[in-house]
Image (tube, rainbow, N blue to C red; front, side, top):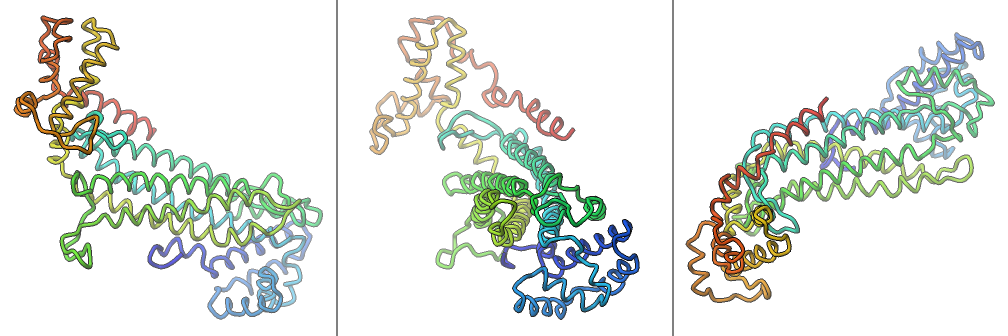
Length: 466
């Protein structure tokens, strides 16, 4: 967790002052609950709030650290410093409680607050994706599978797919926020032997949590594992969109690129460079967030009713994962808002290889005309391979340039080379002697491939938001 990749609101959740404040509220609310039950004097509970409810300044934090260096126990150090302010009534603080009651309940509060910030981040990202998806809803571009031209799509559909993914992430985060928001005030080994369960109920309501149904002195760590797993999934969604942008920004593609600000420099050596540094950075940040998932899974397995092997892990991964993901979501939102799109380049790439993206369309048309699928596939594939060859690429030996023959040269003049070679296929001519291949294309290819875009957007942006 470093300032370069941090935002103040999320960082504040993990600051010592905030942590000690939450610890104090847990203890003070517990005192109120016990006073209401007649277990401790009401005057003592009042004293805790009257004398202990003061800001955790640097001086107070330093004092707690000083005590901890002597007692080697953070909660005892906190309670000792608190007693210095509360006085005689401090003997009623922490009655029947154990350290994990404070630590685990505090962590639940922190993770819940972190989830609230992340949910707001996702809402901003979803808004940006929705706006840009609708802006380029019908902007045609080539879809790629295995990095190779497949069939046409639209840039809006691309973005709509990412919107749907982040919408699922939002739903998952809402679910794990509820799952992680549990309170445990059950005492040693979780039996409530020395504290009434009504205390846990009271503290839970005050902190906006729900009582943990059964704790073994600690809140079960499968809850935390699920929380961090969802953060890892969100990080992967960030990286998937970032990698797409990085690919589209490659010089030979340049269909989209990150905004390049006036005065920005891309390279210390090459003044011409405009590098996708933000999305590359997001790939790196996603790795950091995902790195928390494995340790969180391993934290599920503790000895008997508890040990503290999970503690050091969570002290590191909880701040690091939430702070990093918060930063990454906002960075990606700004990337999407300012993304520079090149529709002309998209259109040129779409038509670069002479209509081969319509191979399936022709295959299906031929089968409707009575040609067997196997025969139709062979005929269309042979024509498509000739299209590849007409660009100086030998499909059987793609690393070797080949000279264009006369037929290839004629194909260069044809707007749809796939139709050109199909029109010269003797087998097809014998099977369908009277078929006008051009007539099969009464609908423009772009219109053909985008005819159900409205239906897709209806599913994504209306049904998803109900």
